[in-house]
Length: 109
Image 1 (cartoon, rainbow, N blue to C red):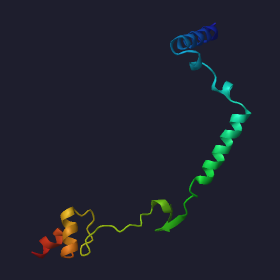
Image 2: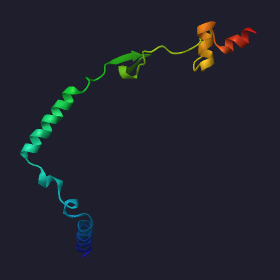
Image 3: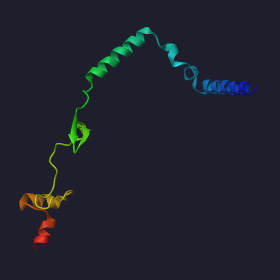
Image 4: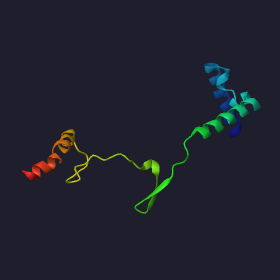
């Protein structure tokens, strides 16, 4: 008896959806799928796989294998004297002009 009520409830919900949004809202998407569409989909999938980048190689870093995508090859901004990271704009100017950051300048004075 409970299953019958559940199925009736499902049917009522589907009818309400159909009344509100139309027949296309309750159709099974597989009903519009055929062999021609399947072949086209597989062709597009193969093309997409071929155009993707090859899997990245791994590098060993401190005894751990890490993908090469995680490595950053650009130069890190830091003070050449005290190796301080996260330099401010003012510090970057001082490093170019004087050769050290503001922190090193304060230590000097």
